[in-house]
Image (cartoon, rainbow over all chains, first blue to last red; front, side, top):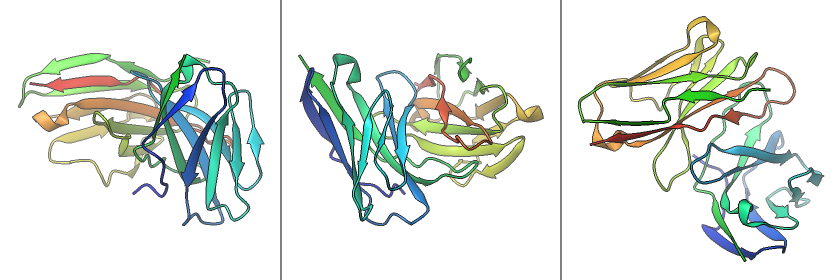
Length: 111
Length: 114
């Protein structure tokens, strides 16, 4: 079973920051927070992951609260191509550990 | 670097027929996953291989689904006989053994059972 809770859907204006929340109140000390997204008719795509510190890459930023019970994925300047389902997953970062997906958040970026 | 390849892209069959899907993972990736994604839901893991051994097949309906990974590279997933509720997208993913263990997904095979 998925160990995260996400809102079913969100809207964002094109060019604005999209902030996608995720609750993971039962996260264990050795579990990382991963984010994937799935654009229509494609397989899921890795975005970013983190343990306790905030992380940033070319796609997004990940903000994890100090108690690690929740996190926020930030797309700084959303475009129409960012419209997708976004999945927040907690997972022990070990070789071969599986990804357990929940229902995710449908993000709709509107012009 | 080539991604995860899957074929066919689409398949339509009648119920009670059999079907097979093929996956070629990223070169050198020892772990291979098959997921089933029903419309409107997140992907559900069916089976996980490490090289050519099964790590987890707890959610595979073994009375009708089977999978193999010969020589620890390519994999096939078979359904026999198919039911209407098997209509879904079947996703293959692979990951490496190194410190970057992110999984990379193929585009999937969309199966419609009529």
